[in-house]
Amino acid sequence: MTRSASRPLGQPPVQLDPLDPLDRQAGVEAVVFDLDGTLVDTAPDITAAVNRLLATHGLPPQTVRFVEQFIGEGSFGLIDKLYRGLGLHFEPARVAADVETYLAIYRRHPVAHATVYADALAAIPALHAAGLRLGICTNKAQGLALAVLEHFGIARYFTAVVGGDTLAERKPHPRHLLATLEQLEASPSRTLYVGDTRIDAQCADAAGVRCLIVNWGTGPGVPVAAGARLESFTELVTRCAALNAPREPGA
Image (tube, rainbow, N blue to C red):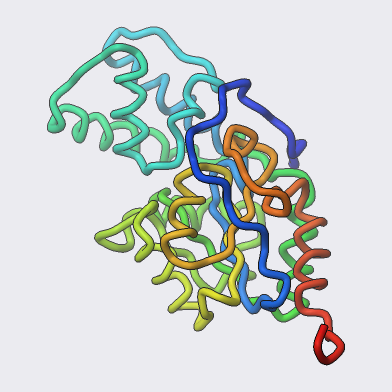
């Protein structure tokens, strides 16, 4: 199942320096994607698991729209910020214990209601067929990320899948993205990173990687410069082809 690639949250833009437009002089040898909110809308399943966790504490269920604003910083960040958003303040040890409970619940049904955004199922094979190396750099646990990719039949196209539990560092630390590039044997200057959050933008900037922010998920709330907004995955295929097109000498 696919989902329309347009889902603004209606929140004010975050305070983030605009991204530089893509360097038209540099080709592309690799494309790395964030997962949640970029390739796949996993928010309904994450929300279902969160609500089961909240029920164990006698707390009321929350909406997908409320929960999805906390997705993107890994499981601990999700639960910790969710609690803070609800006005709850727990010790880190309590949050850590609840994270384990949440993960145990979520692992049972990680893709019961998940949907792929728009034209991703066609674009991923097209990018692969064009000779581009593809990777995933996500703060989601690696095993869960692989389960999502396998469910939608696209795992085989990705040479590298680096989760939030793969390294000591995770986004927005640049090491997370750079480690993904190492597995792809790709250089930062010839890679595009596609994401939907300011964390993705900050990580790419710190790693020296060009970044496109999608116009769905939480992407509409991230300010970008002209040329750094992605409206569809079909557009991504077209733009990669244009960046790799032969140029006349001196062009």
